[in-house]
Image (cartoon, rainbow, N blue to C red; front, side, top):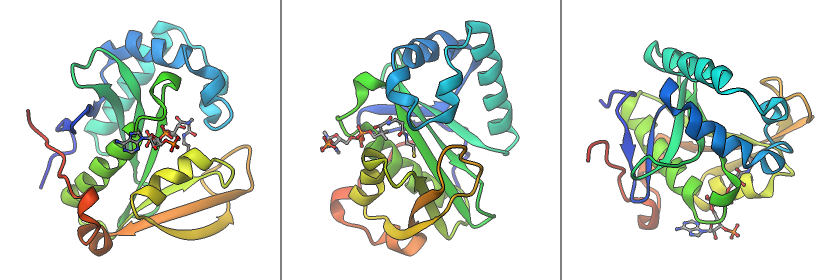
Length: 197
Ligand SMILES: CC(C)(COP(=O)(O)OP(=O)(O)OC[C@H]1O[C@@H](n2cnc3c(N)ncnc32)[C@H](O)[C@@H]1OP(=O)(O)O)[C@@H](O)C(=O)NCCC(=O)NCCS
């Protein structure tokens, strides 16, 4: 069993729980990426936020993480000097599932970072909890987002009426992998993430 607070090291990334002290790095990543994020991330339409507001937000994320309510990770480069994006393991679909969400700063798109972080989080999710499935939900029009689970071999479940209150769309495109399917995936995707240096 892996404790969810343990940082995850992949070949190019560190995924870890946010700390309030990450606020300047997160603000820089968000403020440099708003036109890229706003079409797909409703919260980005409320940005920019002040450093103080982001610090409070990150303290809330850390509290949720520590108390097991929601697991929102920062995606950092390996020396943790740059925020590349954010991701999360969200308990939105009952006790047997975690849903992965993600975003990248604009300058980090096109390099496979979210495919790498999502593969690592999926492996960690199954190693951490007795889950049956890991799910990814996106806007059917968000082709870059849908390409991530497709690239990792998640099965497309189809298009369903939106749940979880997405304010600006009627349909969710849902992707899923099961514990057994993930364990049997292609050797190309089997590199195990590390949880220690
Ligand atoms: C969705 C989002 C995270 C996808 O970003 P992305 O860069 O396309 O995804 P990845 O980081 O996995 O990179 C894949 C791209 O890198 C390329 N790539 C380069 N090196 C790679 C590697 N080692 N492994 C995999 N892909 C690699 C792939 O070919 C692909 O590029 P292409 O689409 O031009 O062919 C990003 O577009 C984003 O932040 N969008 C705004 C927020 C958003 O929509 N979030 C999702 C809401 S559901």
